Length: 174
Image (cartoon, rainbow, N blue to C red; front, top):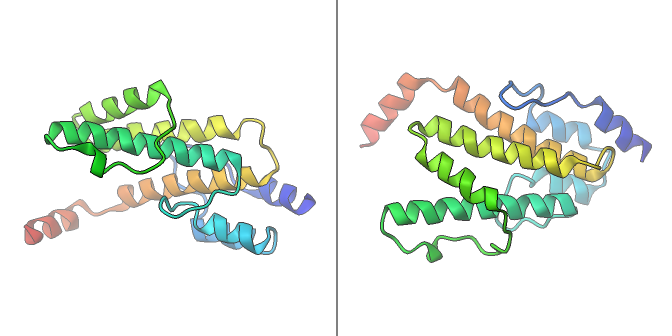
């Protein structure tokens, strides 16, 4: 337990919209030898949606939230394209939270794709903050940290992308 306390207290703070202070790979390397092999494997796979077995209650709630948010986006997009959404929905959509519909609708209505993605990721970040309440030095903190780090890394890739290269790739692909 004391090793876990040391590990968690030595991790740099994460703030939405800022550059990630460490990479996900570095985070996993820091966890090696401080958590058991099964927990380490779960941490490495924490960004996966399909086939992921959640060891902690907080992460189960997180995956239920994220699945429900994704399903709500599928429903909105299916309506727009006049498609039946049921074949695109992810299983286990028993999670109900009224703000999910509102978040998905705001993201969908956003005139900018980037702003829509930001709305979604901010909602994800806020859910992770909510789930972290009461967890200070347990394994759930590491899983929440990993999820936040993956969000920050995603935005760092977006920020560092070369728009000219993306445009050329898009034009040559079409």
